[in-house]
Image (tube, rainbow, N blue to C red):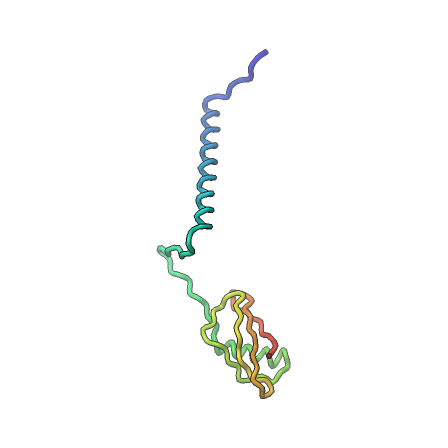
Length: 125
């Protein structure tokens, strides 16, 4: 009975190198995952880049838009809309604007629906 042929030394070397590369990748991935889960939340330095500016709602345009929604879509007599200044455009953020509806002071909840500046106007309360 004959024994199976032994792999050539070149094939054995390639297999060994592949095994070492795979083992190295596993170690690197493990270190990165552990570091990311245990490192304090500090921002990475921005080398050669400038941070992207934070988008802020234009208070005047927002007040006009809210007034339009309340008057045209909700069919209310709304005026004198006042929103807090410097509200960031950030998905999920909610804040309250003040409005006068039929002579009564009301609050309107504004919910930011996208990082592009789309927002939802709630019913006056």
